[in-house]
Image (cartoon, rainbow, N blue to C red):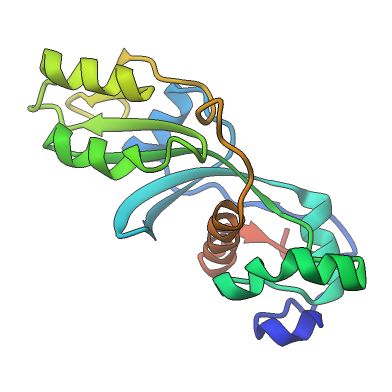
Length: 203
């Protein structure tokens, strides 16, 4: 039942929904420079890593879940059971979030590259290095092998340089899984909790 997840959305949409843009910062600027579509959600804790994600919203799916009172489902066991649930009952909550890319920023390239390396099957990936930490050849080669874009901060938040482009989208062998759906439900939860995803009453 929609109400069983404990995170119900009560208001039925009578007009549009949308996203409130976060305050522009280096990660937002990096997403723009990379031409990644979506809203930047910073400080996401995923698989033991602190990263920023860029995600788009399916407004029709969000409106349908608002109407049904079906909020984010962040229990992995529940999501794993959805395939069986769909066979028996014919419906599961529609996916609202599509993950565009994952970003990590920091001083040491090994740490930030390790942070995003596990997400190459989810979408595009990139690292943003501090202004006083220029990447060496080893960094650029390793990033290229993994398809990770490399950017470097300048003296201001608006001053970013794309040193090396990365792969557009996930690795070719990637397929939707229970884990990838769980990640998008976590992002959906964060967008709502942070007030970045607006509903019918405040869009």
